[in-house]
Image 1 (cartoon, rainbow, N blue to C red):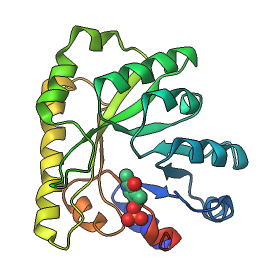
Image 2 (cartoon, rainbow, N blue to C red; image 1 turned 180 degrees about the vertical axis):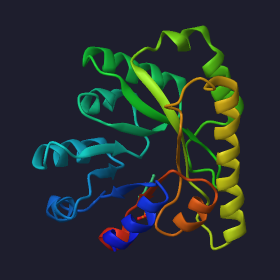
Image 3 (tube, rainbow, N blue to C red; image 1 turned 90 degrees about the vertical axis):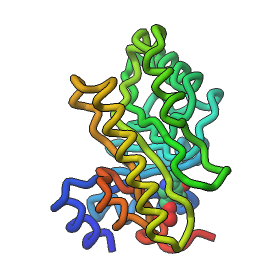
Image 4 (cartoon, rainbow, N blue to C red; image 1 turned 135 degrees about the vertical axis):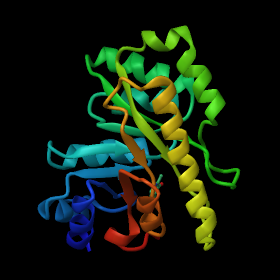
Amino acid sequence: MLQSLNKEFRANNIKLVAVSKTKPVSQILELYQQGQRIFGENRVVEMVEKKHQLPEDIDWHLIGHLQTNKVKLIAPFVQLIHSVDSYKLLKEINKQAIKQDRIIDVLLQFKIAKEDTKYGFDFSTAATMLKDNGFNALKNIRIVGVMGMATFTYDEQQVRLEFRSLKGIFDQLKADFFATAPYFQEISMGMSGDYKIAIEEGSTMVRIGSLIFGARN
Ligand SMILES: *Cc1c(COP(=O)(O)O)cnc(C)c1O
C-alpha cells in the first residue's frame, strides 16, 4: 500500500503523512524501513514516547488538537504542527520555540466541516490575528499553510465543497498576507477515505492512517 501511494503522490508532489496514532513502534519502524519518514500523531504524550524509541531522522507532525500546556513537550523536535487553532496557542508555540532556539513550522487549522466537534479558525478570526501588531513579533514560528478536515460523510459532493473552501481560504490568505512568502505553500487535507477528492481539490499534504496501518480499534 505504502509503495503504491507514494508512487502516486511523488508524481504529483504530494507529501504523505503516515498517521501512526495508536499503532506500536514496531509497525512504525516497518514503514520507516520501507522509506517513510513523515509520521503524524494526534496526542502529545504518545508522540514523545514514540519519538524516543525510533530513529532520529523521523519528521514528527502533530495533527491533533494541542493544549497550550503541552507545547513545551514537543517544542524540542516537532517538525510541523498542523493544528494551530488559536492566537493564544500560536504565541505559546513561539515562546517555547524561542527557548529551544528553533523556528517551528505550523499550519493554521480551519473549520470547514459541518460537524460542531471540529476545531479550527474561521477566516475572519485568522485575518484579525494576522493583522495584529503582536503577530509580527512572533519570530520563532512560521506559518507554512493551512489544514482542514472534511465532514465524515458519504456525500462526496459535500466533502469536495469543503475541501474547495479550504483551498479558497488558502488562496485568500496567500494574497492578503503571504504574497511574498514562498514558504506559505501547504494545504494539508485528505485522509484514508477522502484523499483522492482532496488531491483533486488542491491538497499538497495528505494525512493517511488506516489505509496504511490497518483499522484502529
Ligand atoms: C486520525 C487522523 C487522520 C487519519 O485518519 P485515517 O482515516 O485513519 O486515514 C488524519 N488526520 C487527523 C487529524 C487525524 O486525527
